[in-house]
Length: 452
Ligand SMILES: Cc1cc2nc3c(=O)[nH]c(=O)nc-3n(C[C@H](O)[C@H](O)[C@H](O)COP(=O)(O)OP(=O)(O)OC[C@H]3O[C@@H](n4cnc5c(N)ncnc54)[C@H](O)[C@@H]3O)c2cc1C
Image (tube, rainbow, N blue to C red; front, side, top):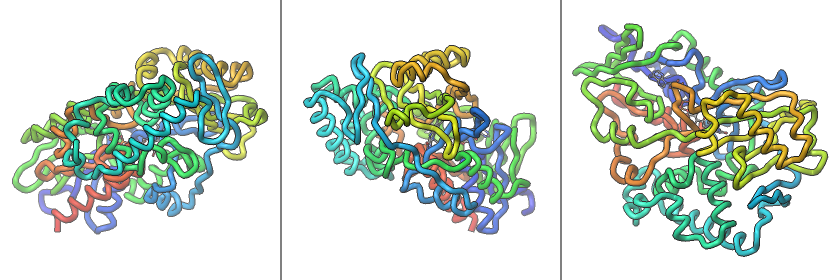
């Protein structure tokens, strides 16, 4: 190891960086993980509500999230099903309606059109290869139009349009006008389609981790070995020469490795200087991959009063800022919790505002949806992800038109001795913790292969 501190320096201790590091340790190589925050877990984060732990960031586990399920199983941490028994609510054009099952209470024509367009989107997504969407038939046309533009062109009823807007906001925490149609299809394809992404049973919201998802990042950090982690150490630059990489930490420290893995959101690449400079297409991609906009909120009540009325706690709105909403009650708790999101424009309206202002807007939405009992919360907590310096927004990086086809091929391409991980680079479950784990695995494989 002459001249080197470690074989691989990993930047970022989210699930991607930690999983990459765990793989490198398991392969018998040395590693150091350098993390800007004073904690691991990145876009997962613990909070407290009425004395119970809640996830302020990533929370749910889907049935296809096999790496995440295996991680929980390794540490004997059980999953618990998301509560979904009972009726759901939809607030559409000023009226709150209740419905059972999967079909929302909408005019018949709107329902038929929603069904038709969803099936069409599923077929279009199935034709995309996540590894090279830019090579798909019609990619240039699909990347020239926003999702809003495509929906306007292909939908006639207001109801179907409202449903699709709600679905897109829920999946991307962005307005349909912000993202390219090709990007949407690629993202859906990486998770098996739109329906799995918006569903509870059989979908991305099926299960929660008992005690929270964030603690699993702590367990993964244990697997890496705490002595291999440097917290509160923002990386400011990466220099490469003929032998290896030098990773500079703000404050002056430098770490020398044979290889580096950058496991930070691509949108934050500009915070890390590079010598030689990052390849032009990588920089261009990072400049065109903004993060989504989301504020996650949990509200506690004396009891889960909606359950007594035969409601599941699930609700969506076409106009109120707080949507979608789910039952977030911890299993076995006496109190009830409604959890949900301010997304896209709503998140941008409320970011930077005092939490009391957000609380008021959230409670007002819940009262409108669930009635006056929702106006009597016993506790409230939220997390404004737009204000998180080391995330810059959430859930994940997005691509506007003309990004995927022009810059997409640079997404996973290494820059010299630097490999790229992070959920944005995932081939499976892009945008999710499962995607982060998969990307870490892939980047570690690349680095290990280069070392051998
Ligand atoms: C509100 C919300 C809800 C979500 N819900 C779900 C869900 O239910 N299920 C699900 O699977 N996913 C969900 N997600 C998404 C999920 O949390 C992310 O996909 C996942 O955590 C990303 O992991 P990552 O390792 O790729 O990136 P990150 O978690 O962002 O990790 C990157 C790390 O790099 C660090 N970093 C950044 N810049 C630097 C630097 N210059 N130097 C050193 N370190 C740096 C950051 O601090 C961070 O720790 C949600 C996210 C949010 C915010």
